[in-house]
Length: 435
View 1: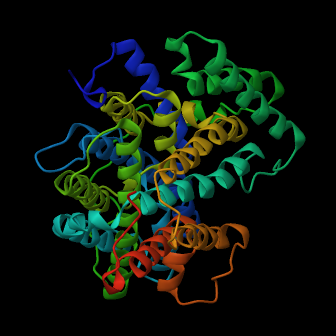
View 2 (view 1 turned 45 degrees about the vertical axis):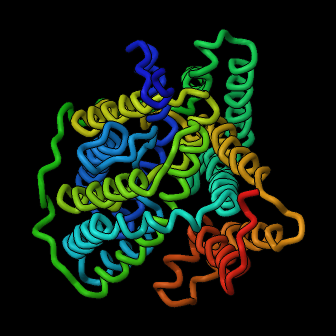
């Protein structure tokens, strides 16, 4: 029998489910170029170019990851997007004299390094038992929930942030998702998030939540050309900082791969993990060539796979194709960008909550009797939530330290891996996390 990951669904169903994944990750996908470009005070035309390039390479990266090309691609339903872990160092590189060419030089080198070390990193899979993977997945879900909450409030930085009508709209979308998931036929319940977003957007139109004015201003066709902002430059400090980012990103990506393998009931041997990490490195190097940034698995969509129960990688491959179209036809991206942040917030609460619940389910397999496993989980989640609950707490620390610790996901991943090594491996202690 064909494994659910490899099943091909009817084209209309695949297209609808693929669009659902795109809508779920779109806000996160365009956030990195907006933040970096805004910090560098780029003109609107350059910002639009960065967004189009990002969507194009996100689509290509997703296709490589899902479909697979030779030894590149994990061949699981994994969406790819720019990693937030790279934002701080890229802003520092871009605003301290190096500019975009220095960013892209560092991105290319770090991407090629990931391709080279992926087979060695994948051999560490034995250090990712259910204790580690369950904690990582739980942390991913918990740390993403504040993102959904900010969307529900109207989007961080919005002049209407926190207005009751934004939260009411998000609540209505969440109610739509719940109602569709509970009462609609199975074929519709699978696209509950998509339908919730579409209904929420339609409801938002008469209440002046949406702004379609930018649709008419967007170009019909736009193609990202290599080295649009100049040939890359290779500065040692920039390269080193981006390598640190990619090492952290590899740890996060491994957690996402393991989460999706758990949800889809797929095997993830070291060779398959290496193929997925190689694809991350290749996509990152392509990003440096085509004027965008480092790529990683998007945790947002892990929750959507679990929520819908649709495990086919071809559905997410369809999402990759749609992202390519959005990158080639900016007018389509402008239409998607008109979806109100509050609508995405309502859907995000369901999706990110599902990620956390999946991690808790994985932790249910762990033995917590007569060992320090409960302490490992408690400390890791606590460390992950520090930068979430106290934003800016590490602002006075060295730049390399901020790269790791400002991200709750990165901090939590590093903590659970080190604590698991300390309590279950160092000194010849036998790991009891599998039982």
